[in-house]
Structure formats: C-alpha cells, structure tokens
Amino acid sequence: MTFLRRLLCAYRGVAVFLLNTTVVFVLLNLLLYGALRWAGVVRPAPGRPPALAPEAQEALIRTGAAQGWFREKEPFFPKLNAEQVTALMLEAYTRSFVYEPFTELRERPFHGRFVNVDENGFRWSKGQGRWPPDRGDPSVFVFGGSTTFGYGVPDDETIPSHLRDFLVSILGRRVWVYNFGRGYYFSSQERALFEKLLLAGHVPEIAIFIDGLNDCYYANGEPEGAERLRHAMPDAAAPEEHGLGTILQGLPIARSAAWLRERLAGPSGRDGGPRGQPSGGEDMTPPMRRVVTRFLGNERMIEAIGAAYGVRTVFVWQPVPTYKYDRRYHAFARGGFGRHEAAQQCYAEMANERDQGRLGADFVWCADIQEHVQKPLYVDQVHYTPAMARRVAGCIVKGMVRRGLIAKP
Image 1: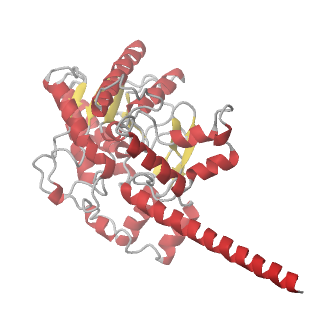
Image 2: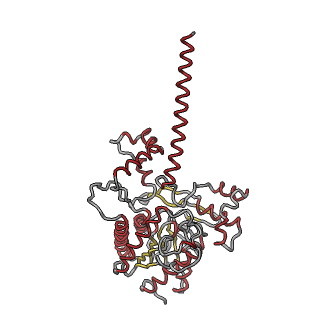
Image 3: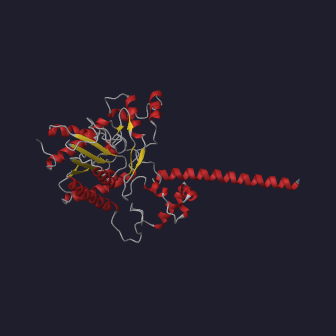
C-alpha cells in the first residue's frame, strides 16, 4: 500500500511538472509570437486580413456586425453610404488567392457589388471589353501589384478604369483596358504573366507596367508565398525539414532562436539578398541597388518580348507614401510603414537613374506627383484613394503623350 501511495505521489508530481511545462511552453510561444510580430520578423500578409467567403461577408453586412469597422474610410467615398463602404472594404480586402504556374499566385475569381475578378485573371474595369480581345480591337493590358488592382476602391475607380477614360477621350475611339494588377506582384512576376498571355495568343496593342512599391518591398527578389512553397517541397536530403521538423521550425520559439542566431552572426545575409547568396562578401551591392538592377533587367526583357510580338510597352514608376509626400496628411500613417520605409532609398536610386537619362523613352516617372499635395491620398497604408488613382492615371497618359507613345488623331 505504501508503494502504491508513493507511485501515485510520483505520478502526480510528474503530471503537474509536465502540465506546468506545457503551459509555460505555450505561453512562451505566444509571447514570442507577439514580440516577433512587433519586431516585424513574423508579419501578416501586407494589407490582407484573413480571407472570408462571400457568404460570411454578406452575413457581416446584413447583421451590421461590421458597421463602424471602416468609418475612417467613408470620407473617400462621398457617393456611398456606410453600409456600401463596409461591403466594398470586405470585398476588397478579404478575398483569397489561388495557385498559378510560373507566377505562383493570382487573385481568385470573385463577383461582388464592387469588386469583380474575371475567371481569366483580370479585374473588371469601366466599360470592360470581352475576352479574349479580337486582334483588331485596340486593347491595353495593365500590369502591377495591389495598387494597380485597386485594393480599397470599386472596379470603376481603379487606375486602369481611369486610364480607359483618358485614353478614350484622347484617342476618340473605343479602347479595351484589362486590369492584370494582382496583390503582391512586382516586375519579375509581371514579366512572367506577360509572357504567359502572349504565348496563349493574347497580344495587346499596349502593355503598361506600374511598379515601385512591391519591387522595393520584396528586395530579395522572391515573390510572396515562396517560403511556403519551399517548405511544401523539402529537399529529400534534408530529413529535418520533413514532418515534425517542419512544424517545430515554424514555432515562435524556433523562429526566435533563428532570428537571434542571425543577429549574432552579423549583417551578412540580412540585407534582403536572395536565398542562397554567398555570405562571404562576394556581392557587396547594396540591396536597393540590386532592386533597381533587377527592375531594369526585367524592363529590358519585357521590351524585347514586346517588340517581338509588336506590343508597345510602357513602364511607370508609381507614387508611394514614403517618398515626397507630407505624411501629416496621410490618414493611416500612425502605425508607421514597416518595410515600406525602405522605398525612400530605393526611390532615390531610381531618381538617380532618371537624372542620368538611363530609363528610356518608354518610361514614365510618376513618383513625385504628390509632392505638394496637402490632402489624404491613401485609403489605407499604401493603397490609393479614388482621387489618387485618377491622378496616377492622368500622369501615365500625359507621359505617354509627351513621349510619343500614343498620339492624338
């Protein structure tokens, strides 16, 4: 009997110890996750809350559960009431993505009141033309990231929609504009998408590429989701990346250890350089210089591909809130801009290229159109208001006319 009591006492002691250890482990991971989020080591996808099914969006709107969430955005949409602004924001920010070969991801087809994504990969614009466009139709493909797609604005208030209005007014004829802007995209993915469309026989008259924000954000040249795909296809020679090892590596405590190890190892390899780059100092090019070099390389390849197919290409360097804009007028600057702050250095590099005359006759500089504007121009941290989208579209068309890329009849 004494033995059983001792055994029971030992069991209780071990059980309490294991329970306390588990609780401490979970709490430690939660605390570290919060610390990593605060430090920017673990981040949610920029500008993207969790995806919601259309039924869930409608339920939030119908029950009024989301009323008040987007009150600070209502002044940008004077023609919409509060319920409509809520519906717009839920459609704009809570959609999901689907996998696409070569480009890695694209916007999922979606049909709502304010946001409509076609099954063929483009967002509807004002006066949307049929797909595929006939070879005789004057068509314009517009490529870019989420600012081109138009996160936070309706279909008819995106940059491509305003471009269509300006082009019709100038050319005096019907023009089909297709919005191939997609969340997270930068110039490398846009080049791949352009090639896919051409190979499929979809050849526009003009292809416009609007870049800057995401090229600077993804300084290492890897698209969003690359790390998840890397873990989904582990090296067979590295068993520690399989199964339980992958789960353990994803825990905040393991990420914290990796982050601390990198910090103690010094600055090599922590400047946004590509995965697998030598850490011995072979490439000492500053990261933002590499961004500019990569973009200009993509520009040359797109130009060559476009010329081979008879497509006139236009490249646009877009405005961003961290370059030549008075942040006192930014309605959402209170939380800072995180990795987007690096755009200041990146844009300075591109401005130097422009000043040296190295950007070419098909390049339109729109980065400083907000320099003396004393009003809110962004509907969230980085995406444009309807008025700013129209301003960007106007800059693009004026630049195209000035450079002889389009001509009045």
